[in-house]
Each structure stands twice: as structure tokens, then as C-alpha cells.
Image (cartoon, rainbow, N blue to C red; front, side, top):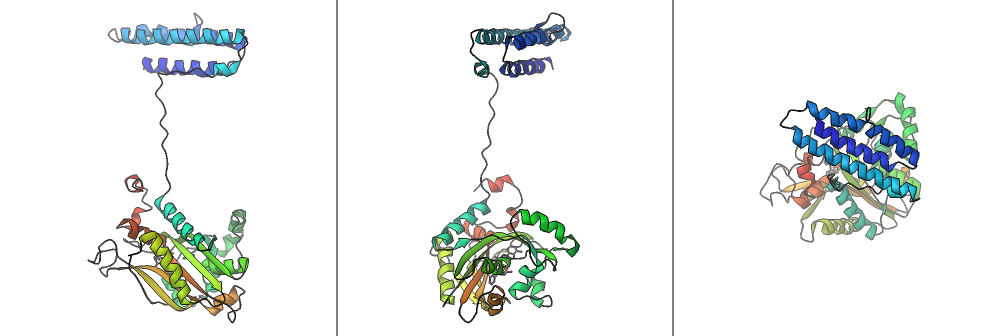
Length: 362
Ligand code: FA5
């Protein structure tokens, strides 16, 4: 539409004038737009006669305004250049009639916000934050934490495997990300838990050690209201002399209290994980149904939240730590589930749905 073309040419003139630094350039621009025969603005004005008669006065008015403003701008710039006021002034051409651009302010994903809160609480208790690769050697993900290939516990954590032949290729790119992949004689897997960081952290930092490792994890999982194939865990590991279950309970309670409030109910029950002995599971009381029963807690009024236990001597040994001198606890909880209980979110799939109506609430 002609009206649009006038708007566009006006903006073009403004842009070009902003870049004009000499009188010669200005002269060239003047010809480009105003020359009687081939000037671009002149040609547009000539097109007005082809517009429907009823429309002509309106377009004519717009054309006159654009032309008038353009002439004024040219005069102003000419004066600037003649008086030595250089091109900085030219960039000050400001057209108040152009609608402003609204900047959309982003926000952090709710899981990022929650991770940061958990990190703050743990850092306050002297834990450092460590990271580990999501694409991990099968060895660190399983063997190093006492889960050999034949172990039935592997069935509980099925994942996505990458063939050995691609390892060197992948190694190059992950090394650049500072996540060294070692033990590449094994397959690579998308890590099933953050427990892959346990041995890595002991190898790197030695003991005494107090760290958390939050991060993304993957499982070949049928999804439902509380299971995702891609989710986040926060691993905790504390190794020192004389560490006991009491230390775990104190640290764990402090986290839950800080995030969910002092009155939130939890329960600890025995649980089996090959990398701890003894092992337990911690449940959160279901905040969604307040004990009435719902699909998230599978009508039990408790939501499985965390695996934990005293680090198995084999894992300490693999990490280069003497189990006769040192003991430790480890835990791994689901960040999505913690967030669900805090905000009453009734379906885990909402986190990665990309649904802005959901995300904008936080
Ligand atoms: C583990 O992953 C162990 N590595 C935890 C652990 C660490 C035990 C250290 C002992 C010592 P589990 O598979 O139960 O355990 O997962 C731990 C938590 O992750 C669960 O309680 C749950 O909150 C969360 N989680 C597990 N699978 C899923 C899933 N598919 N979707 C969402 N959250 C999940």
C-alpha cells in the first residue's frame, strides 16, 4: 500500500541521514530522494494519481507531511555539517511518531529459581556446588557407584545409550565444556541421576568433602503426573570423619524447612540403592491433596522425594577415600517434586511444556 511505502521511505531517509558525514554525501542523498526525474520520494508522489479518488486526499496529506519532514531534516543536517557540528548530531534525529518497541522482560524458569534457592541454603551450611556431565561414561554413572552391568538395579534406571564408536567425537566437544569424560572404554549414557558426580567429586577434591551437585538427569521413562524422562535432581555428599545418619537428617531437614516451611511433614523409610548402606527413601507429605489422595501421590498421601544413605565403602574406595577412616552420607532428590509441593503443581509435565500461562505465574 502506498501509505506504507511513504512510512518506509521516511524511515529509510532517517536511517541514511544518520549515517551522513559530509556535505557531498548529503548532496547525493538529496538527489536520490528528491531528483525531479528519478528521486525515490518524487516517484512515490507521482504514484498518488493511481490511487482511488476517494483515497487520494488522505494519501496526499501523508505524502506532504513526509516530504515536509524530510526537507526539514535535510536542512537541519546541512546546517550541522556546514557549521562543523559533526555527525553525532545527525544521529539525534528522533521521530516521535514511530511507535516505540516494547522490550519483553524475560524471567528465570521456576526450576532455575528453585535450584538457586536450594543452593543458597546449602552454601549457607558450608556445601560447595559442583557440576558434572549430563552425557556421562557408563562407568561413572553406574560402575563407579557400585552398580555393575549385571546388577538388577540397572533396570530401575534405564536410559539412553550412545555407542562406543562415537565416544571420541563426543569427548572432543565435552572436553571443551570442561566436563572431562574419562573411562571411555565404556558406553556413554545420558546420566540417570546426579550420583555420577559422587566419585568425580571425591577424585577431584578429596576429603573432607561437602558438596551438592544439582543438574539435569534422564531416564527412559513412561511419563505421568510425577514422572518425566528429563528431570532435575540435587545430589548431596558429605564425607568426613565420624559422619552419621544424624548428620544427614540435620542437613536434609534444614533444606526442607527452608524451602517448604517448618511444619512440612516428611518421613524416612528403608530403601535400597547399591551405592549406600544403609539406604533409605524420604517422602514428602502430599501438599496437593492434603492427605485426601490424588494422582500425584497415587492416593497414598506421600510423594517419593529423595533417595539417601551412608555412602557404600566400595564407592568411597573407588573415589580414593579410605572407608576405615572416613564415612559419609549422600542423597539425591527431585527438584521438580520439591517445586510441585511448594506451589501445588499437579502435573510434572507442565515444567517443560513451554506453556507461558504456566511459566508466567512464577
Ligand atoms: C536416585 O536417583 C539415587 N541416585 C538417589 C540417591 C542418591 C540415593 C544418593 C542414595 C544416595 P531415585 O531413582 O529414587 O534415586 O530418584 C531420586 C529422586 O529423583 C526421586 O525420589 C524423585 O524425587 C526424583 N525422580 C526419580 N525419577 C524421576 C522421574 N522420572 N521424574 C521426576 N522425578 C524423578
